[in-house]
Length: 310
Image (tube, rainbow, N blue to C red; front, side, top):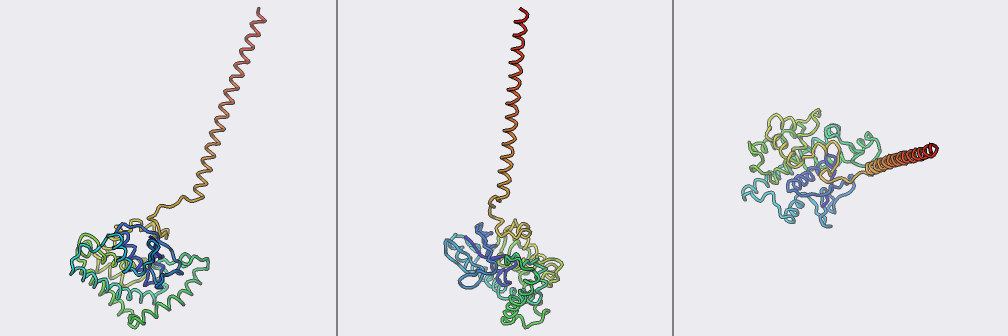
């Protein structure tokens, strides 16, 4: 199974959906191959993320989760009651249709902070050698403006930054109150709500600490249980989190093929060792033959002396 995406560097309203998908796949102990689309490839619906399973393309995170649950016979919400499923649906709708726009609104108005806070390297994202200064400029003109138009059309963009921040803090308060002192929203095991919440909360919480961000500060100061929830989900679903962030490797969960240079180095070392052993063997053989010749010479000399004595 393969799915397309490139982490925090994706257009902002798409990365959270891919993160939700990855969280669920990790939680259900399924494996797949991440494909870096370099901001060029999309599904037939024109959106991200999408997965390809046995040659079949499945787009939109909600549909993907539903299809994968049916195909693999695993439902994260199997233990929930009908009432709990309704609450979960309402909370997910709040996150995906309200909180996400709060976050996106801040990003479109603070692009420089986004680049610094998420350590965005557009050269890596696009697979180009064009200087990042130029790439950042054109990113602001294209993707930045496009995002700002979306936010304004949705309605969030018409409010002041302070009002938008208040909307986001209210959403965080609701999630915090619902979580209370439980490990996860509905008890001891994660459900779809935990997966979706983490995909969005992680992007608020784990932005660089030197980047000013009111939602992160509010979460840390007023919602410590959400901070703990993020830590539990991160440890459970992404034990290789630090490696992913430091290497930007999208498939740290898969075994890596041996690098050609390392392979050649090992072969050279092996050949060098074999050559050394051969040389040592040849030297020992030569020494042995030399000793045998000296011994034969000594025997011959002794025989000649005996003849002369007679």
